[in-house]
Amino acid sequence: MRLKPLLFCALLHASLAGPAFAGEKGMLEDRDWPAYQRCSGCVALQYGWLELKVPQHLVGKFFVPPGGDPFVILAPTETNLPNGLVDGPIIQLKDFAKLQELYQKLGVLEKHGIQTPLAFYELLGQANLGDPVIDRARKVEGVANSVRYEKFSKGPFTAIRIQDIEPDLDRLYLFTPDPENYYMVSGRLSPALFRQLMSHLKLVKF
Image (tube, rainbow, N blue to C red; front, side, top):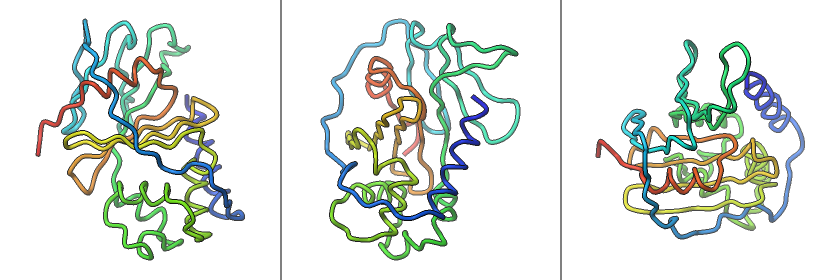
């Protein structure tokens, strides 16, 4: 689990410094919100202003690290690792200001008038922009070579899902009316857990 952030950072810097990738894969597709599924024996988790419910048979425990930027791991009990570590999908609260800082040198957001994190990820899914900087950002974010790049909308929520060839690199972004913050669920997300998370999202603010 500790190696994943280091690997992502290495890929990020290599992508920013390397040649741009151009291709038609990873175009954003609108999808219907998954059908509601009852959650028997679920427990609620509130992270910031987002509340979600997870079934105990799919998630054995919540794990919060003792230091660094906070995140929550949804850890099935059978994936516990030595030394008390756990592995599973990770939920993080993301700051739009950090995304702006990351792409400041490329000028992506300023050039395209991006004001929200949702608008940025929607931009990455547009076809035929002919912009090598966008191609590079698509590569950094894992969109260019994704198996599927999907958008779901319902009520105050918009979700964007990047399904990678390697499921451990999958990402689900959850956007609310808050233009400054959003959520990311990263890692292997089973179809059953994905449907349950999407069925029971709730805002406790706005």
